[in-house]
Image 1 (cartoon, helix red, strand yellow):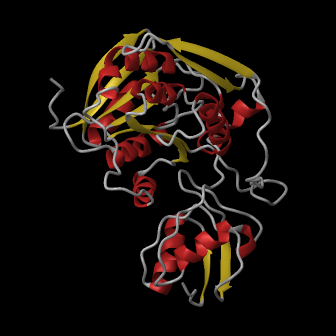
Image 2 (cartoon, rainbow, N blue to C red; image 1 turned 90 degrees about the horizontal axis):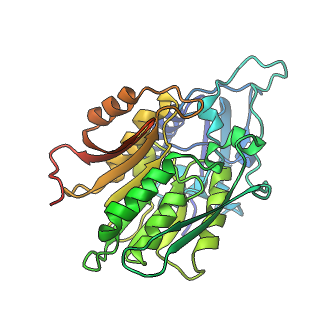
Length: 360
């Protein structure tokens, strides 16, 4: 395919601004793009502006493409996104750490850089320091399910940046529920097109258990937004599945309606939505509540039995969220809920779309 010549120059301070500038230039629909490749940027001035939850450097973007170029994968993805009359390529995963949600950015740092640290996409994650082994009964087999996971200690530098690298308490309750209440669904041989999604997978405990219970009957996708967490998650999946297992994958998924729509647009096959969505210890700052339920609403199937199972700890360290905030946001996005488990500060909810009938 021939690459058309195109160029754009724009000062950008937000993802909306990127999209607006490009749309004005090319009259084309564009995805919300987290950031351009550094090799295509000229940053003027060096200071940056950030705003949550969508944030990109405030900079002057100027580049021209005379095709077909010799480009990195990252650059090539941008070329596909910004040139008119181009087919949309799959977007490469972007550097992202959940600390950005928890920390306020200061634009007035003494060093003039806006406190933005350069992210190295290829930086290796140090070896995990903690090992966990979990054994679960398999209702349809005499052989137990054994999961062996690796992560980091709660006081480590890695957890300071990426909370998904630690094992959190609520995952235990969600796993128990999967074994006791969802195994029949996951192992139903008449439901060969079942799709399961775990959001905020962290170390992958719940998603891996769901996959193991399904006996390859379901397609299971484990997701996280955090770059380092994804690295450890993929190691854990590799250590607990066979190399030729094509029924489980790990992907980056940032939360929000547009991110979820972008994710769907990259999927192949007739069925792209999910029958069962899982998540534990997902919410501890208010800013992620609405994006989470937007994501679930966009990705969940519309049939009556489709549901979102979420285990929530109201006294998780650093939690600034009241449970009523979570449930109100769910209702606003069109969900009703049942409380499946309550144990001290941990609750397990089953969310369904309003109007959906309960399973019989």
